[in-house]
Length: 385
Ligand code: PMP
Image (cartoon, rainbow, N blue to C red; front, side, top):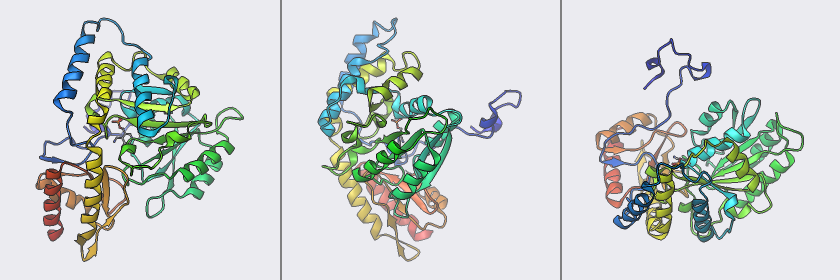
């Protein structure tokens, strides 16, 4: 739907005129590799647990849910202790309807008129929208050619622009690039030194690490959670949408200092997390091992696909593949008409994503069968474009 569907008699906010709703096309095609979902559906055992939990609370739906969703926050804490070896009390955790809502709540609490949020592009394209919706100015520092952070430029920008929020995605979307812990330490240090435009003297930027895809990192690599202790202004956003294969349930969560969680509690809608969502998430978290079972396999698929892509040629030159720690790969780097490649793949039943810098395309890891269809289709397309 475009803005011309909105009748001119409606007093749409001036800054929203001409805007269109965010989102990749939701098309009914055989091979969907466009929105970084997990291709492996929850098992019958998981579905039965969800159904049981939901049945148990269905007779209480006349009552509002636990606004503080404490049982779920405790379950997130148990999961993170196992996954990242970081033990946190439930007061340092917070859930919402996808990490999209977590991020919006952070912008609502810490952004606002007269304030700036800083990111490092190319990065997740929703950040400018959270900024727009909260009247926060959005600024970017460009990543290097290999999509790693330009740490010096980012530190300079933090000191110069005095943002209230710095948002770093790790692994980054759409490039898959991880944020090494030594770089995070440098950014935290810069935030400790920087002031915040439009806020009281003595305040420092909140540094948000968006770890939506972190479970796909190479084993043994630390998460930003390991830096939470001693950093009151660090917030780590997570989701059950990706590695957990739970995108349809809309469950994201935040690990941060109590101060950040309390700030977010001020702006959240009352009872934002329905009893149904809480029940489903609790059921899924009981099956953590099973739901995460395919992560290893998807990591291997990523490695194999990256290797395969690097052996393909476009106009005589090998394809470039961005180093990824995620469940997707950004590839190409020199496509003259990426829309055409996208369209030709779609004609062959394979949906990927036109995203990131010109000349690149992103493909997310599917099942083995889906990946062989992708490979066959891409070979056909590269032969004709
Ligand atoms: N962060 C990043 C980097 C993402 O790519 C996405 C989804 N594509 C999200 C957050 C939001 O995910 P969700 O709301 O499903 O948790």
